[in-house]
Length: 513
Image 1 (cartoon, one colour):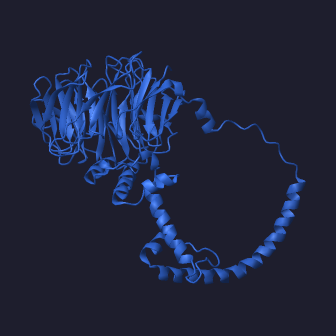
Image 2: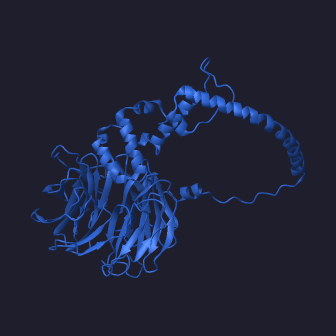
Image 3: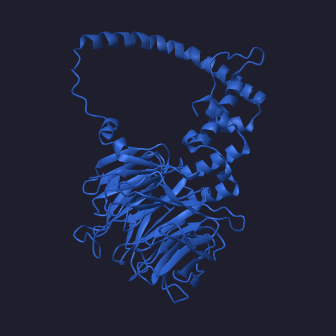
């Protein structure tokens, strides 16, 4: 908001205030509330550029308003000048008094300060003589020569920056890009946006990166149709997308609409194929989870087990899965069964994400209660309760290591990304935090392990993508983007990393680590 043009664009209309409230909710960790508020207030239809709105803008506007009141209270009504020392007032005083009352408070405090000032003046004269003597002694002392100064964190980061020549910026979306996912078999990247489209980008050598296949999500029931989630099937032949209009859609790899799945009565926040690729699972704000037959597009089974919105779902194997909700519960369900085969209780606030480890032995969950927990089907209580985070945990990811993984010789780790700006790596066998990754300065929305399990990438609303070594927790690469980051994703070979930005772009980094 440095230029006059940007300031004019942010005149305080109701749309701007709604946008600032939505951004405040996002930055404070209330991501789902922000998402719902943004659409119910029609913020998504505004033309506000996220790049012109720095973090903390709502608080800044409020603070400046209070400062203006404070300045007005300190002005003399006759000549408009500040007489004497500027008197600070509390936010409570500024909000609960009119200008005349504030001026009276200011005058009373000035009178008190003048009385105190007479006494302090005498003490200062004594201290002045004492200080003079101390300075004479100090000058007589020889100064120690300063030793070599080590590199600052900023200098270290600049040495690790991804070269601009190694970054491709994909442009085409007309709104924030919330999610992206690579095909499991070829260099195709899918992205989903608030502009009612998903796009498939071909990142093969020699292809035109700037071109994409656009998957238009037609309006249904006059509802918003932001693409909130997407997932490729096991062989990359089909892409499923979930939308705010409550519809799931299945597309071919070349962008043709194959199925429109209509059953949910609210936005879909999570959508996943089973490993076999014959079933699709969706979770919705309408509190339900639905299993779909991928071939026919018919509903296989509806699970209405939660008492509040379903926030995430994840398959354990080809016929059982877990769901989590704002009702603080986690249900494990099996196809053909009407009741949960297991219910995990222990979180004290909404459960944001759940993930099964590669073997299906452990289920991890994270919550607004600031904990990450690990569960097993053999017991009712969590086997690990990780409590080191000091803010809400937005997402978790398992490393592709340990039993039943491609990297079975490496230990199984869980990564948790939090609004406290940190990412923590947990060793499951030892049950402890092995690394705390602390370079971000804003909430961390996304974390992803490289396919070989040796690196972890993180994306934050501080506009930075960081790549860390799993072995020692050191920062190995960093990329400074132009807006907040919602998602990071590695390709199957682990040499490219995609990141989704709030400024309508997707960046793909060539990383040969």
